[in-house]
Image 1: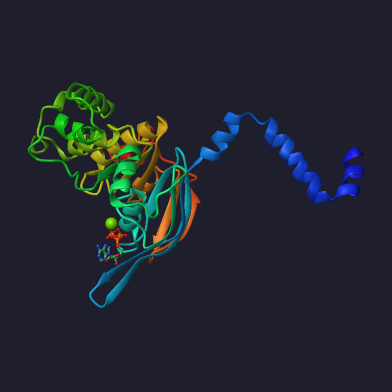
Image 2: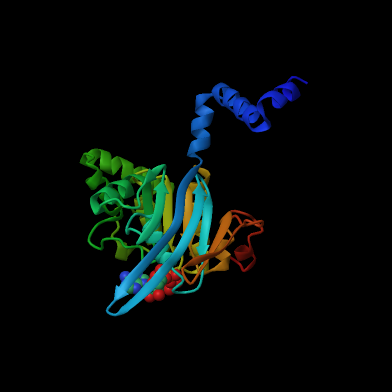
Length: 281
Ligand SMILES: Nc1ncnc2c1ncn2[C@@H]1O[C@H](COP(=O)(O)OP(=O)(O)OP(=O)(O)O)[C@@H](O)[C@H]1O
Ligand SMILES: [Mg+2]
């Protein structure tokens, strides 16, 4: 009744904007902050072109997408579709040619290389197909390496590296060099290294590409634990079995997002009915 009288007097739009302001004032500040923080990655019309002599390669044509905190996304698509290019931009290893990239509410699209490096060290952990470990360093020293740039003392570096190696179940191999470890163990060292700075986002480009099926499942179970602990995970993969673990699947084709959909049938690596286990793993 009161609403209809007011609506007559000052118009529907105005009454809703007044109601909205009253509600906003009474919403707890923390909730507002939480709502505002939910999206961790926003890309708007991102392009990336490479110049090769006379040829211009449009690796990303116009990519717009957003990813929420604690999402678990698989990025798929044919070879050359732009997955690694997109991961490099997401991970602040490279800048887009044009477009806007908001990471954790900060516009990183036109940052300098040194500013990008700082954001990268704090917010992002990388895992690569080829592990990218330093051959002369032990597992422990490989994991502790990113902390050198963060300026921690040697004692704190070792402590944090041991904690990260515990998370991937590898403390018994921490004095081994990479060539004294199996492929799966090397990838676990690389994951520990990605985790050691406590980044919000883990980016993995074909993390199981060099591993057998059994070891791939072990690695996926580690990603699940990291995701359960609150991290945002983005995994590039060609393998549908690996993408099945993600909660959302984004497909790229020819430098654009072809589709993005929720995975209705998430497979858990620790599920007793896991299809790999049926094969005798
Ligand atoms: N540094 C570069 N210079 C020139 N062209 C590049 C460069 N990096 C990538 N490209 C080109 O950009 C396109 C996208 O490459 P990208 O590596 O992102 O594909 P991808 O989806 O990761 O493929 P794959 O599945 O084979 O790893 C390809 O045509 C590639 O040849
Ligand atoms: Mg690639």
